[in-house]
Length: 256
Image (cartoon, rainbow, N blue to C red; front, side, top):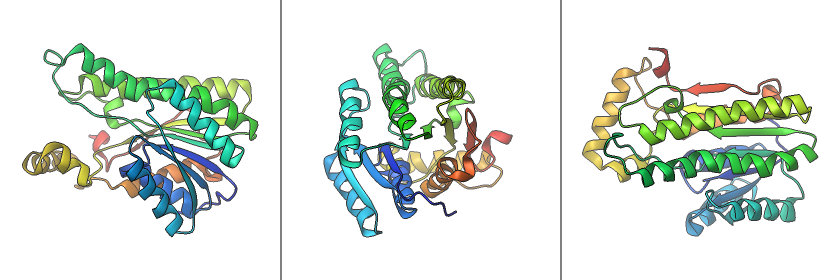
């Protein structure tokens, strides 16, 4: 789809690769200036260059979303460069899959920090700045695992479920306060890319992919572009009345 994001400022966490990078490129294509954040400076510079190559404007801010000081810095750098913030995409996160009786407590706590607590920090510091712009949009990148149980999803499902609940609470608070900051959670199914093979190995990744495809009515996995296009709809004027919702993009996986 197309949308007019000219003059809008979007901070996209974890936009050094995958879904986050595609969201940044898609928003830039529609005129938004992008604040790319992530831990990897090299990949961040690559994202900025890709945005500039399509005629967009962007800066990179190194950020660990688990650290409150990094959130304060990312917002400060955004305001310093662009004097405002209209859109936040809480995309950065991690996925560790282990059974509950095997997973170390430290791993569970890490997953809650990187997925759920980072979402809280992002909204805490972004909402007041978006409000100053007269309103805007926040998308918290959850997962179908945040809506449906899955084997070995102990920490991942819990952390993504926490993001889902946080999104609803914050959306209700913002609406009640009349500040016109819309907040939604976006729930991808399996999104396929080079990172799947890198993290699981080629043979295991193929088996996992085939299993998900077999359970998906549309018989395919998703692409980062699928999620970026839905995110674009939600942050645009077309999504102006949508807040506090769980938006699923999964090829029908959750329907069966």
